[in-house]
Length: 186
Image 1: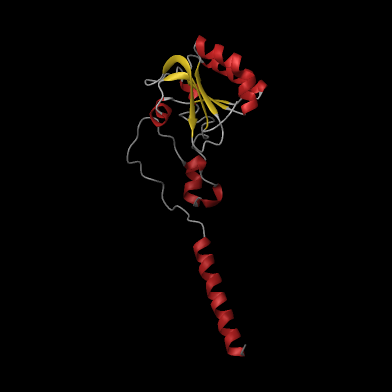
Image 2 (image 1 turned 30 degrees about the horizontal axis):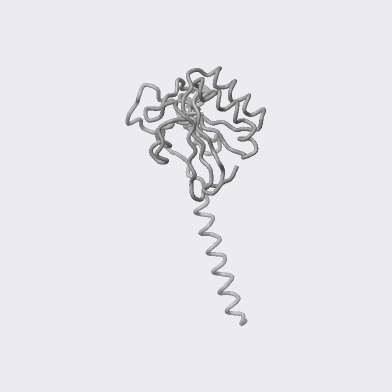
């Protein structure tokens, strides 16, 4: 390689490095944001920003802002929003649904007497299958947490889910229901 080629390559690398540095600089807000809509539950965002990224003007204002809330205003955990019911599913007789290409078997139950009775009877089989459980009906948090802990102690993972989307995708109307890989022999 000639001396000129090496110099040209070094110049290009230097320019490329400078362009990366200019892109990597943090964006520092120079003004506080304007509130376009306030739902009544709006929380000031200043405490959530890193102190290094704030301008000195914003830092002075942030010292008078109360600390960020310890809990989010809205929980995504369905257990916080019980009772959970399904419009499309109801308790009924056990159904088994073979699904082509299903990797992990799963079952759908409610917290009604019939579902819980079936769950207790089928627990050993469900553990052997390594099935996952979906609970689509639950009335109170304590009963749900108790069932979840009991299942976890036996090796079964249970999750709460609104069953309407499952019912429409897999075309079933009653629970308990078991979904297994097509051709699964038990």
